[in-house]
Length: 516
Image (tube, rainbow, N blue to C red; front, side, top):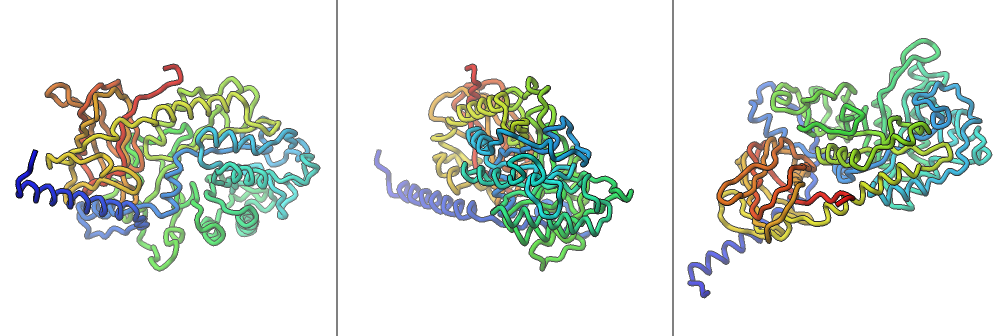
């Protein structure tokens, strides 16, 4: 069909618009804004506060951490040999002797499971150190393992690097063995010394993991942790690391069952009245660890009553067994692949990073039952997300009526940007053919904030649009499961957003269980 001159001009103009839009999207997607905190004035209107919330984004470290999605915890130490979950700090180092210890078996198993980082309990609450610390005698150097010449941390780090895993370290602030615990200034110095050892002698560390466990020392006084001094040391020695838990980098999701909230905001309130904007890490100076476990952390009601806001994403932790440390009696209680799959959808699929604990046994090896569940989960995830039915589709944005190829919106360093000024949007996907699917994925471009507050998914049944899934927040990634839908035309309707939405990805998939 020949086009007249006016039609040709329109087509050239429209092609230019698409090209410029794609270039702009690419540039915007490559930006990491890094403004992860903002104060709220008493004179700010609700609309101004919502706009401020929408402007917040992760730091480079937070963004890189979020992309990991699925990471491992390794609880290993004195409790492995005593059968306890919390040691007393008086256990004899002579019982620590993992005679078949093989950190490469751990790292290889994690790599094959699709896990991206592993975090080791270098010291748990009992105070026993898995490296030969020069600041205490309560460590592997006084155990029979390798005649006191071994270093669990060293072998763990080396194995992770060999298999391409990032490395995290857990160092319990609570220490039931050290005599200075409870003498706060003295113990804080001891703790910083141990942090210094771990963060200078083992190369790059990507995550430092704290919990808030705290008790009384031998003097009967409760230890007061100097969190700010810990942060300062970590920033100096490992500036690219994120700090979990009792810090302003990453928060505990609030339970130990592995699930995020159905509405999981990464932007939450903080008191920023005293922040120093000139500091390299201003939040470190004012952050005070406290409870972030409420069901509602970041709704409009919550943020509009706040004095400040910051980007504070969630990590969802759970153990593959009932306990965090290995217990032989739990060998038959390892979570099934279906349990792990459900947790994956409830963590990674709810804007969290999934932290799965896999504890080695007394021989120093991961058990076959645990490894089998990890492999089975990897198989399901690979088979499910291998084929995105939305790829290759034609997409109509809002009411433009113009079909644009999926690849113009989504792909490497690309994103779809809703019309500025609009807090509603709609994308209509015309699939290459009718497909049957039961999983959907939506991702926001969190480099430019978290905006979506409410959405729904619809399919065209003859001439009627029918809802097959709906949700609230999206964030880095939202995964939804639903009864199988067979359709060719799909709509993503964003009903409410904090300023215009910016999406990084959209997908439709068929869940591939190991039995189908």
